[in-house]
Image 1 (cartoon, helix red, strand yellow):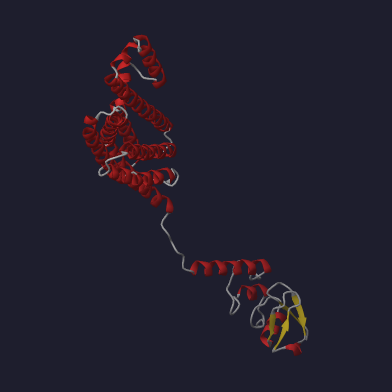
Image 2 (cartoon, one colour):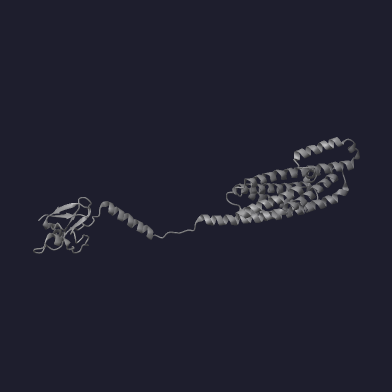
Amino acid sequence: MPAKVTCSCGASLTVNDDAAAKKATCPRCGNAISLSRTAIKRLDNPAGSGPPPLPGQSASARAAVPQSGAPHTGSPQTGIVKPPKVATAASREQLSEESEDEEIEDEEIDVQLPEKPRKKKGRRRGLAQVNLGLAFHYFLPFVFLIGTGSGLLATVLDIGVNTFEFEANEEPANFFFFSAGLFMLLTGVIAVPAAALGLLGAPEEAGRGPVTISLGLLFASFLPAAILLFLDHHQWLFFVIGFGALFTAWTFWMGFLNELGKELHQNNLAKEVRRAIVKGIVTAISGFSVVLLGGFLVLAVIQAPYILYFVSPAVLAAILTILFKLGQFDGFFSFFFGPSGIPFALEYANFIGGIRMVILRRT
């Protein structure tokens, strides 16, 4: 006799009794449905309960009996049995997604340490290296000043030998050129480790271009400084070349400190760096001008004392006033001692101490 079979998707199918022990395909979802005789008999019974009712057994008592092979989800007091939940298409999709999630969870995951703490630790280590390099600059300017002063004095004496034919100045000139070359070599030897530490420890945001150029110029200054130790003519030319290489290297080093101040969000520090660069350039120009022009004037007076009759005190006062205004000196003390570079060297050492304190607070 015809019977109804319900698919898992909820569709109802009507089959004949002769279709038992066969399989049918659901027209809705396409799943295969078993049409065993047991299933058909179970479907013939509307209540879905196992054996047929006993003689004299009421419907409520029969409904209270649990089905064989199925969980009892009803209440024995009411006799109401809850039908089992039918798996719909949405539930099947949810089950498939959960199985996919379980497969993903079973996969091995490469767990890495957070990048930010490592980067912060490396940044502190780099700043500590820069801070160590800055320590060399406490006494570096004074070594550089000794070499520069010896070279300028030797140049003045060399002018006396070649221009005014003062033969007695030749031996002192060679001695001071030798001293200039020696102290310029020493300046480069001290400055190279400082620049190397700055290059190794510089943060990426600060940039390594200026300190790299500074390091290259320091190595380039070794050649003219070494030549001064052995050459006995045209020493002034190699002195100027060596001085230019060292001073330019220092300028690029200060440019690196300027970028470092910006990266550390220290606008005052960057401003102090720019001010130190300007003051260093003014000190170098005034030092060369005073020593060379003053030395030339002294040699000229020694050669021809009558020149003093043509140079009045008013002219000298006017020249000094112009130099004072152009150099922007704080007072006459700095005006007379400023060209020596000593006041700037002391101020630079104080400036280096301020930078090191800022970096120490960050490390």
